[in-house]
Length: 96
Image 1 (spheres, one colour):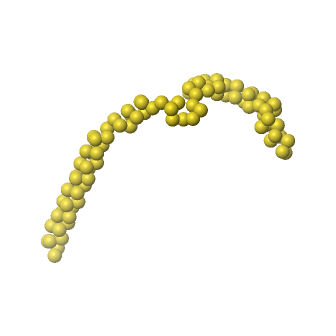
Image 2: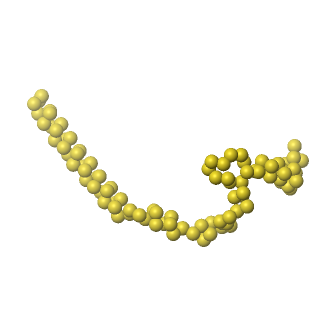
Image 3: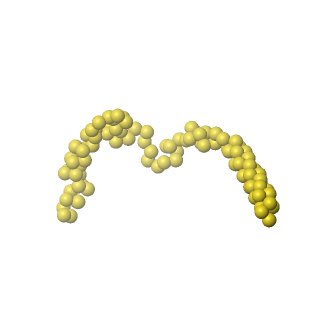
């Protein structure tokens, strides 16, 4: 029994290896078939056709100064002004 056990283990390991190779090949073939589909759909995407109310240059772009920009671009001042003078800010303040 001690002599047969290593032989049985070797056969089982060989079958498992063959099975994983076929699984890898199937996945690889599938990946080659769909290669480029994701990037082509992104490149052809037109947000104005898919997103209601889309605007390429919204008013809020003035607050963004880039990745390395410091500060808030006036967002805090505009928010405070809107809170004090806007209808929503007044309603919230009155509810307290």
